[in-house]
Image 1 (cartoon, rainbow, N blue to C red):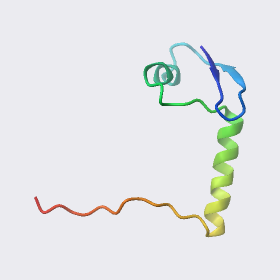
Image 2: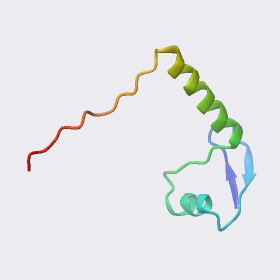
Image 3: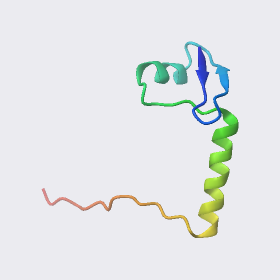
Length: 66
């Protein structure tokens, strides 16, 4: 299966029956990132976390009495 990275437009080939290919075929909302872009994003995110200016806004969970 041929896939295209959403960030750098690099075209890669993945196995037709791999779990990633199945996920991309069945759910079009999922996008493909090449390994270089995924590594770059994870490295930059770790740098921002280490700087102290990174805030992750998650909804606060409230306990339900029911």
